Image (cartoon, rainbow, N blue to C red; front, side, top):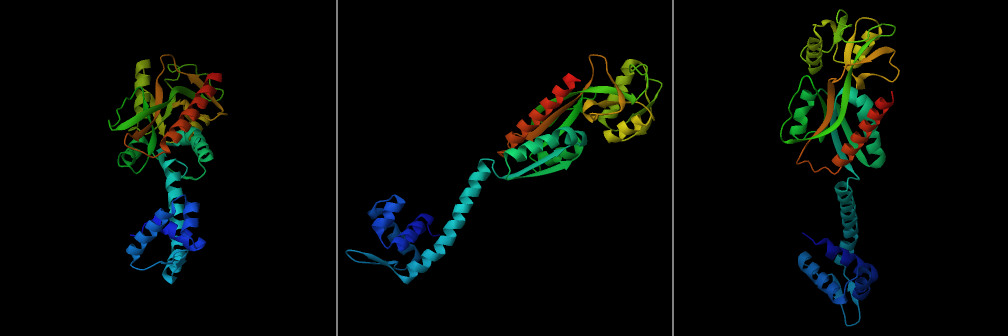
Length: 300
């Protein structure tokens, strides 16, 4: 394989018609330029310069090789630029996964911040529940996933994944506007709206109600908290939802649960071996987005 350093020296020597001038431009000695040209001649198996006591003259082979080398060296320079950008996190691809309510309130803000800070990156986002996206992080298909766990339905995460806590969401009781429901116990006889029976949200609700002394009569189910909130808004029942599921203008009666209230914990998971330089950037952006959400809750 031809040495790109020698090719760069060749192109400068052909352009200037002088080993001494090429040495001056490249920061070498004249002897170093002469040695590089000699090594290149051995590599290509042809004489590249006609030498005399006072001058050097490029051969036809040298002139053609110089033309071809300019394209190759330009491509190599572009490659070096791209590699530097990748290693600095100025380019590349960030592959993420998250769940619906986090995508709407947290991930959207975080990704906007990432793209603003690193306009040259490509961001890929997939959506799914924790068990649906976990495998893609473990096998390296995704750089990180934003997941959740409920205090009343605790779970563990694979030991090889790094956990970054992001947000503790209070669970709140919601009812249609105008309803006079002040507590979980008062809501006991109501129709209840909940996520599917096999979900952490449903198990959390059942345990929460059991601690309050009743079993909820669940009549409607949806894994989309936006749908749950709309069904409640229409007066079809009451629900307990994580606070992130509420819109700013909900049109709902929202009641906090008594302390110590249960929470849904949001965290980011990534492999400890992940070296994507964009990973710290998105983790920082997620933390900032969650801090802003929590600050808004404190003011409400």
